Length: 360
Image 1 (tube, rainbow, N blue to C red):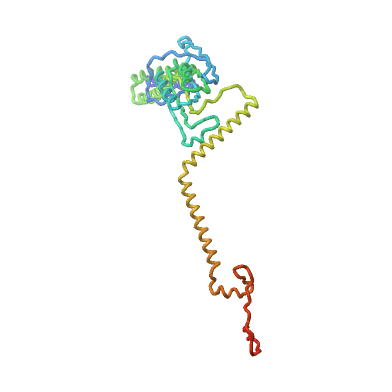
Image 2 (image 1 turned 90 degrees about the vertical axis):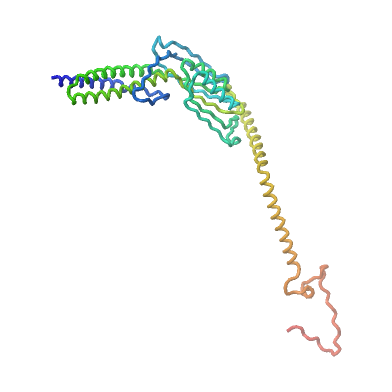
């Protein structure tokens, strides 16, 4: 009889836990990126600080974000709010601004969760018509929620704020459901421990212990989710992007056609001047190589002309197998002055004989 009663209690306990698990399956919290990995059984026993609820309106401007931040104590409504901000900044003094930003994060007792800096050596190529250079900082920061809006507003001291956005996520329902689920598991764990003490056979002990292990695993996961949500509520996230520029972008009202044409002309002329300056610098850097190549080319041309002249003189000189005096008697030959050759008179033949024929 006791064995049957023990099995019935165990079945009822499993059924209760299954219902609680099914009811909670649709409310699992997935919004934390602060500390999602915890060891089993980790519990956050610290007192939870009171938080503020916010309504923020943002706009782009050179002086920073424009908005309002209305706060109410969470003790009054028990809201669980997670704040996330995104701020884009331009700066003329990159190193100074980065150093100042890190000092400000330290003053607000914040945590740099992620930091990435990028740069390029091809400065003249990567800089665009708006004066954009090649160094960029991307940073994800966790700031105590009580100082969230104050910190965001203070970022205008680092340079020109180009854009600001703030998102508020209400996780109160997920928090309440997870808390109820954990409380149900704790009650089941207590009953299973009582059943373990009353178990009389090894089979009963094994069955209770198996279920107790499952409950403890689910309980640890639920407590880890609650601890993660508490930390996301306590520490807000601010994503900061800082870019180095040679001059700030103007934030003005929409331009008309004439203003756009004038701006395009100025940008085109500025780009042309920049390209010419960079080309001059490149030519100066390559000047020694250019001089060496030029000297080699001139030497080749000089030697080629000298060789050609010598060949022409040799062709105009003695031709192998011919006598210059014999060439004067050849048809068409001319003397050095350009006159036809003079025929030498022949002596009379006293015997009245015809001169011998030279032709063979």
